[in-house]
Image 1 (cartoon, rainbow, N blue to C red):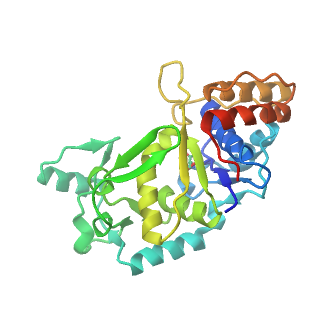
Image 2: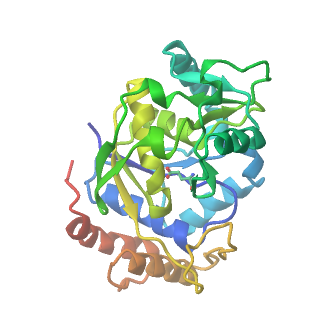
Length: 301
Ligand code: GLU
């Protein structure tokens, strides 16, 4: 199979130092596999409420300024919704998706009744209230029926973080696939797209590592292959917190070739690569490929 990697930014803000690390790492991982490997860009605008107009095009320009050019035209999730519909229909037909009418308050009350105060990243583990029907409430979301999947710890190996495990049913619960008001959940869209685009190697920021078990479970439910996963180190802000668009991480400056090279250089250091010696982005990128291969042991395809 042709090695395929991707960078999948959400156009909720411009690229910042943290997202450039993920872009660079996924690009290097593909180039380290040899000439036949493909690097794709997918603009993850499925969650339309959080996306900013024009931001997808802006991110593509920032990447191009850094000589991070995809091997095929970028995909946009908003143009792929028919595929998500089909996947949800498959899950429904298999009894693996059910409508849920619970508001956040309903979920809190149900959890309190059960004596659960457990929160996970500020998210409640859905108590499964609507598994046996909507109880007269209108549907607010479609949820994945984790109780219909083989239970227990799901295990996988991350190429950087090593052996991982998560019991999705117990630790996450029946997660949302689609909200009734329209937007597709990241988990469903990313699984459908990675499979359809033939992605063999997912390389992305460590902040997303916790989603992996949910995605593997969905792949199993849909009969899709599971790619390899590598989660890159997080870039931390001066306050020690993870850098993200939400906590005001500043956009990288790619306005001049020198600025773009400096941004790439900072990203490369976060990955443990040596500072660039070459004078432009394309040459610096080429220089990091063998180093990446040594560090992360990419198999040539
Ligand atoms: N769109 C996601 C984000 O920007 C990344 C998805 C992924 O790489 O799986 O956080």
